[in-house]
Each structure stands twice: as structure tokens, then as C-alpha cells.
Length: 180
Image 1: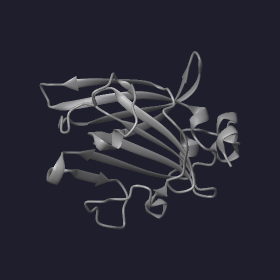
Image 2: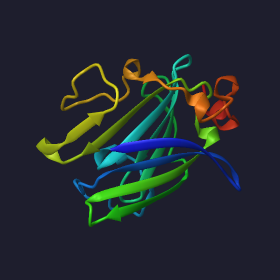
Image 3: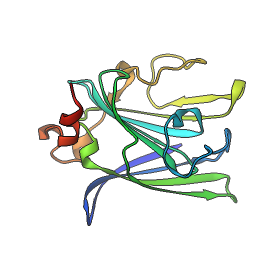
């Protein structure tokens, strides 16, 4: 799996562009719903990216499927979802010749918490006893019940290279409306 993150400005606002590419397993097969925001996407073949503000334990989780499905989650505290199924621009290409896939997403800047300073990423594929979990940063062995929300496993990221004023930003109105 390859994941790249870049600043991007589109005509209708500021975005962070995320590109995903990797081997296409098609196991499990695609969700039985149209591409777009899809709940419980972690049960399928997926790549996940987490962007953490470790000072407040707020984070953005985005998941991308090779079939055009995605999910966006805002979390305040470990595993505490405060918003889900947010829309974003996402497209995929399956490359049958190479057995690979590529995805491109434009994530609105407002979806990111301010002061993102840690990151982690995961890839999941396979079914049943063949389920495979890959983690970019970890201090534990991934078992049959991995916990991708172990915030202590996340590693520092210099997010100011992507969002120049990252450490000076405040929470967007969307975040403040949902936070307790």
C-alpha cells in the first residue's frame, strides 16, 4: 500500500489531497451499495488514515475502498465518534492488468482537527481466517482483534508541510458544533 498526502486548493475551497495505491485483492468483494459514503467500511478491503491532535485526542479517520466507497469519521477521544458519513470527492481506478488499484480523495480542510501532530495508516483485506491487517506504525502484534485506535501507537507527522498554519488553526465550526 502507498499513501501520499498533499495540500491542494480547488475552486470551491481548500482541500488536502490523498492518493492511495496498492494491490487489489477483491477480498472481500465490494459492499452491496453504490460507491460513496459507506458505514462499516472497515469490514471490507480498505485503506485507513488517521490524523491526530494528540493534545486534545481529537482525530480524523478516513477510509478508502478500491470500489469507490469511503467513510469519514470525526472523533473526540479514543473511539468516540462525533460525526460520520461526511461527503468528500473520491474516485478510484482498478487496474486489471497489474492487479492494483488507485484512489484519489480531496478532503476538506475543515474535516481536520487543528494542530494535527500524529498520524497512522492501515490496510485491511481478506476474509475469515485469511483476514490480513497492515499497520504503518505499531508497537504491538496485530492479532485477530486489532485495535487501530491505539493513539499511543501513532507517530509524529510534520503536518505544517501540508497545512502551513496547522499549529495555529482553531477547530472549524463543524467540529465545534459536534464537540462536547
